[in-house]
Length: 408
Image (spheres, rainbow, N blue to C red):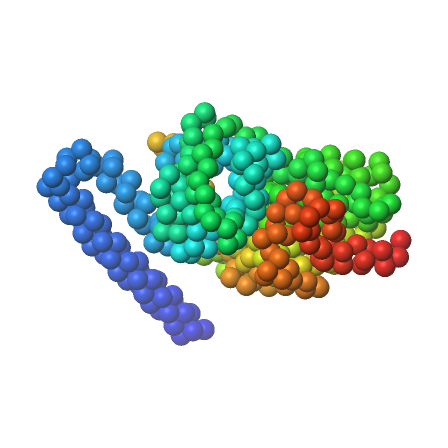
């Protein structure tokens, strides 16, 4: 027993010494790197030809930006004004021209949809159009965030956009920037299809989404709906808490909504549904519509309802954005967005870079996509509008068919 005890103590001390050595080595690496950084900082501060561009504050801010942008697409730095605007957007307000946009690497900025009653809608900008230039800046050469910075600005100023729709000739339009308050569920995105199928189109997950959804359901319940379609197509996501709040209205308390994996935990941690008095009736059949532009919070909500057997999904595989961003405000009012984890569905399936495959895949033909995106913005919940060149919303038609086949 003494021999075993002594051996155990020796092994513990040896492990402790190895851990200390590793920590000491990491500290040395850190101090060497900091010494190099400090040396470069001093050299630039003391010798750069334009001293006003080489203040410590400006150089440190640039260094922070550089560190973050070298990590991943969703990590970044926001100055004080940009951070204030981010807070406003997540709260359902913004200053801009009223566009929901998307951008792929090295491609121009794409218009997903104009917001209702916005300068962009008044100018007739159509979903599926590309913004080639913003004030003469080529959008293909800059990031999505930089595009947004150029479009946004002070109220009652203007921004010039060069637009191309399909194969038509590009044209320029100058739009006024306005204070825009928007609902995550537009008024024309709530309707009854047929006699008893409710339809709700959710544009984004912001701080008002759950309350907007509750109002929508009060309206639909008064119409006596017996099933529900939730349309998340072209929804780019938003707040995690908003997705959790909405999913909680469909699931039993303490149901797993998602898992998060991070460096701080050895195993993925579960985020579960909350007990809410505003729950949707458990017997109400639900179909969720998704497509390749349904991302982030949209994917969390969809995965939660699918894996818990609460809904089926119809449409195209989702975007595949499932990273956790922590927003940390700095003392000067600026902020950093740092990726600290990844989401997994309740069945522990990864989403990042993969997306969620719907229960039933129905794709929009490539030749019809631009027309369909335009149509979806104007006529949500309509299988085929009575308008020139209308296309059939095949996924919506299939969702209606499935709900009609579902026994009450």
